[in-house]
Length: 404
Image (tube, rainbow, N blue to C red; front, side, top):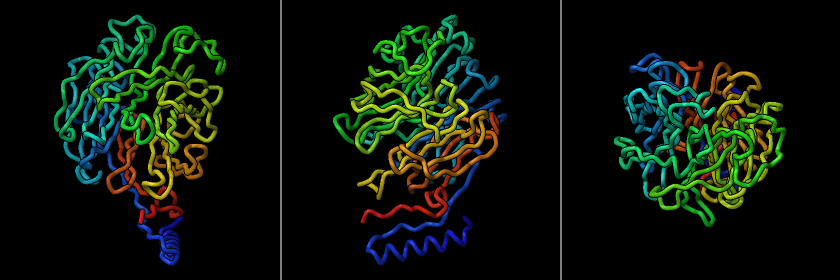
């Protein structure tokens, strides 16, 4: 839809809403992009694996991995960050959050405790000399380890890393890590206030989950993947692993709290007979899960994606979920953002952000209710930040209604 038609539609909706007594927050379509991390600069050969959150003060924190040697998950890798104090319009200089010498500190995942304002960061660590195939086969110098850090000053400084590997990882799990991107804090129900971080892992044979072997699909492979959660009910003082495990074939995932209080996990899935994403539902805070369901709409080349709540009925005008991924069955390209009005059952709205090469992504809701998407563009070259509003995403067909 061109801008003139969008403008006419916006004025028509505004006039109808005023006549019917509903105030509308009208806006013109907005879409803008900038490259936050550029490979070959700042002393790093490559930047990878984005994560983005907004603090209680409105500061936007954009994390990623800084690779000094190569693009792979080993060697000298740091967690780096840039901050924005104006809703993503401009950004401060690169900050190194964690540099553990020649070891790999990667896969950043972050969550903000809205009750305390504390920001948590979960890096995945491995020995710099260990390659991922060695780690997944149990033949490496060390193992994948989990750490947690926090900031109480909007990311200016960070606590020392605290290892939580023995708490959250079963010894027989080989690959292990928090799914890169973001966690959530539950807003309703008996676990209100709980901080939830999605995770993924792998193991040999059938000893992956707690509930015995489940014939979900065809499970001939010896090396199985699964997904689970870690959570905190005391504002990050302690962390534990949820009993429920979703497997086989489920890997990197993101979690959303649905309007009815259920949790929905959205997965990168390794069952490649269908090149789409999958989801599962928990009605008890992650203790048990439904069998994973393949979502034919969410075409996927076997890559990480991002999944967030945009609006909640009762707080805003209606329920909206957002999903972003490289929406191509065979190649990591075609970064696409989709919108659901029915809690992930269908995705009637979609727009392409980047038609060419694109990989991992992370989304957030910015302080002015625009949407921020940090994603890997022109693979291994840029960590690109896109900022856009609902009007742009829906080509003028939807806008945020005021609560009055």
